[in-house]
Amino acid sequence: MMACQNWPEPVIRVQALAESGLTTIPERFIKPKSQRPTVYSHASNQPNYSHTTREDINIPIIDMKHLYGMEERRREEELHRVAAACQEWGFFQVVNHGVSHELMKSAREVWREFFQQPIELKEEYANTPLTYEGYGSRLGVKKGAILDWSDYFFLHYMPCSLRDQNKWPNLPTSLRNVIAEYGEEVVKLGGRVLEILSENLGLRKDFLMNAFGGEKDIGACLRVNFYPKCPQPDLTMGLSSHSDPGGMTILLPDENVSGLQVRRGDDWITVKPTPNAFIINMGDQIQVLSNAVYKSIEHRVIVNSDKDRVSLAFFYNPRSDIPIEPAKELVTEDRPALYPSKTFDEYRLYIRTKGPSGKAQVESLISKCDSS
Image: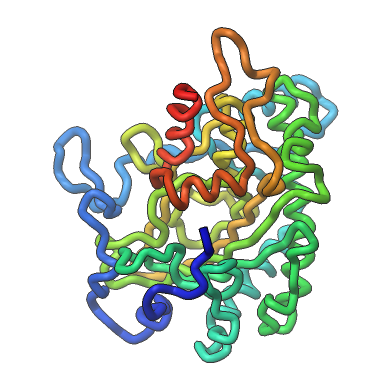
């Protein structure tokens, strides 16, 4: 199947729309009622416009200093909390993670400054569906699709053969250096997290890293999300409901404005970012490798009428041509392999051309495995 070379229709820049002073959003952005951020209260079956039925809970917060400290009891407790978060939530926040707080702040600031540049400058980096690398405003090529209320910038970081800083913005002038350093530190953090996840599965510490292809061959890319203010936030989404198809996502959220929501049973939980924390979530490939011990959970992003938001999603993925399948140590007679072997490339092709959307994309592989 040949990749689409161009977008099927003119691209709408959401930031330009938002700054035009419009008071109603175009029909192209209005979601079906079942997909809007308004949900129903289980108690009254009446609309609840707070965007979620649960404001009293948050995803777990993991203090990584306890995972590398000398006190064994605290370390075991924190390992247990990580395991529970991966099994029950698929999401957790990490603090004391080893990445400089100043670097995190700088990374957010340079991208916010980029999105404030004149549209003509940003258009010099306009992307195509061929690689998605560059400045974009849509994530699919279906003509007439309902769009999300966001713009983004997507770039490749690893493997090094795909990294091309000439495709990265040169304004602000510090952006390329800041993001090169930021990428290096987040890749290191991802390696530390994979070790912890492997240990909690009862596997060698290097199991997941090796399954991903080794530290020099992992795939890593960055999508910087810009969510402009929206005059009708109850009718649209910043990012539609989905699970991440890759290995693991390391998100640097906007500290001042919440927007990420995680599915928890029948509820949507609005994540409350902890200062200087990263939000980490399991992707479909880790669910497969763990034979569904760890969960890749559906999530989405809401927008608001008062403030713009910027977030940096760093996707930490397996090498694209390595078969990914449940770890043999996690396959037993009572718990057989739930998923067939597929490379990440094959999986991405499957969900683009044959598979369902949202969380169902990885679950649909179970039936494929059962029928094989």
